[in-house]
Image (cartoon, rainbow, N blue to C red):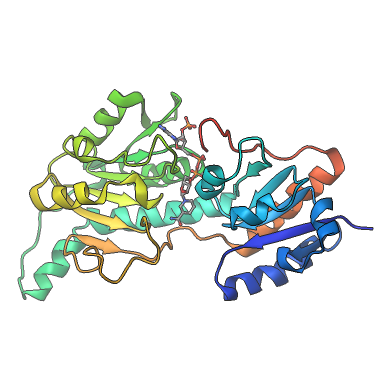
Length: 315
Ligand code: NDP
C-alpha cells in the first residue's frame, strides 16, 4: 500500500483545484495525495510528510505524527511563527526556475527605475517634452538585502546587465563581482551607496520593520526601493514620510502587510508608488511538483528530508 501524503492549503479555490489535480498525478507512483479535509483520523495519524501551500497551521497541528512539511511556497513565515518549535520540520520550496523568474522581475523593475519611467509617465500626463540625463547601468549601484537563492540569482542577472551590485546577508559572503556586506554597519553602508535597494530577505523577528525611519534616513538622495520580499519588512508610515520629504524618490511594492492591498490604502494612488499584486515570482506548478516529488521520493527511500528551516533564525 502506498503512503498517504496530505495536502493542506488556504489558497483560493481555483488554485487549490489546480494543485488537487497536479499533485496526485505527479506523485502517483510513490504516494496517494489526499486533501486534508478528505482524510479519516487514521489516515491523519499515519501521515509522516505533508505538502502545504500557506496552510492553516491548526490543520498542520492536527496531523500528530508528521515529521516534516514540504511547502509549495518559498516564504514560510506563517508556519515558522505558528508551528511549535518541536513540531514538524519545515522544508520550503527551493526552485531554480523561481530564482530565474525573480531575477527577471528584479531586472525588469530595476530597468523601469533606471530608465526614469515613472518620471516620463508623469511628464506625459502633463504633456511635458523633457529628456532626462541618461545614465549608464555602470553608473548605478543596486543594493540587494538578502543574498539567498533569489537574491544571488538577481545579483548575477543585474551584473550581466552592467549594473554595479552590492548585497547584504546575515553571514559574510564572497561573491565574484558583488560587494558583500553584513552586520548593522554593513546594512547602513549598503543603503548609503545604492541607487536602488531591492528587498529579498525573509520575514523574521529580525527583519520585521527593518526599513524604519532610521535606516531610510541613510538612503542616498533620490534612491528607489523595490520590495519583492514581504510587506512587514518595511515600516510603511516611515516609507511614506521618506517619499514625501526624501531621500526616497519611488517605491515598487509587490508585497504588503495585508494582501490583497485594502481599497483604502494610500499606496494605491500614491504618485511615487507602483503597486503589484504579489506577482514577482509565483510558484511554477510544472517545476515545483517535480521538486516536491523528488524530495518526497528520496525521503521514502532514505528517511532523510531536504534541509529545513532553522527555527532559531526563523528562515
Ligand atoms: P533564502 O533563505 O535563500 O535567503 C535569505 C537571505 O536573507 C540570505 O542571504 C540570508 O542571509 C538573508 N537574511 C535573512 N535574515 C537576515 C538577517 N536578519 N540579517 C541579514 N540577512 C538576513 O531565501 P530566498 O532567497 O529563497 O527568498 C527570500 C524571500 O523572498 C522569501 O523568504 C519570501 O518571503 C520572498 N519571496 C517572495 C516572492 C514574491 O513573489 N514576491 C516569491 C518567493 C519568495 P544568509 O545568506 O547569511 O543566511
